[in-house]
Length: 76
Image (cartoon, rainbow, N blue to C red):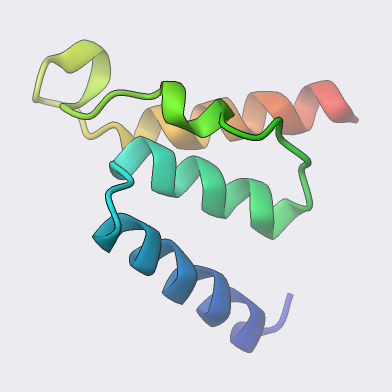
């Protein structure tokens, strides 16, 4: 992957965050985009903000990354 491709995805992810995506949604969307994983429209919006299980301690970005990795594994 070229650095300009990564930069473009990260820029778009940050725009989505500013538009209302939470950490989990943003990371899930970006990882899926970077690895070419097709996701059903609206799947990412099932994540809720506030960290893992709403605990406020571990950022939901971890959940988004794990969910995308799980989807990639299932696709392969």
